[in-house]
Image (cartoon, rainbow, N blue to C red):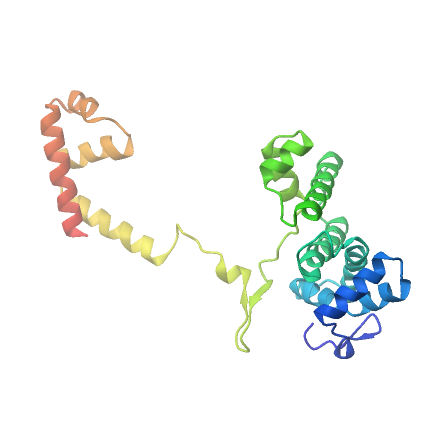
Length: 257
């Protein structure tokens, strides 16, 4: 992606870069119906599309297709932006629209099948999200979306999760010129690590140093979840004795570990 100079016949190395004052002037002309200013505004912000689609590099997607789809979002942003209404930079307003178009394209072409009802709800959520962003210049919360669409919060979460893009374990997330770090490298097995294995061995050895009664009390308390009163009734000693034996056993285990 970074080495690709030409996308859809456009030489990205020669793309225009508009200054803030130039964009403001062009946007005011666009609002008045000036088609030449509209064209100039779109061409002057194609680098914005490039910056967005770079997030999807390395997924095996056709970057030419993503660029064209991103341009649709850019055109929508140019047509809808109002300098007098929005007190934000054009890029702040445009990026979510470009990103939304690209994500919709990826969802529609995804091999993961989602039920029609879930997909329809997800699109309604995205439309509501886009409308809220346009009116308030900030993204709505899940609760606000759920209230607006008269659905449960859980349904909003489920619908958005169902249409989210699956990520390959081999997708690169970082590269500094050496070995590339993939998603797989950041997925950690918390159960079968060397540290957990060593801890298990050390705990087993520490348990062997306890008396049979102490081991039995700890098993009842921490493996079966019984109270000290329940343990005292089963073992046949007072609750105070159970408490003393349990405390002594735990102290011995900590010392051994």
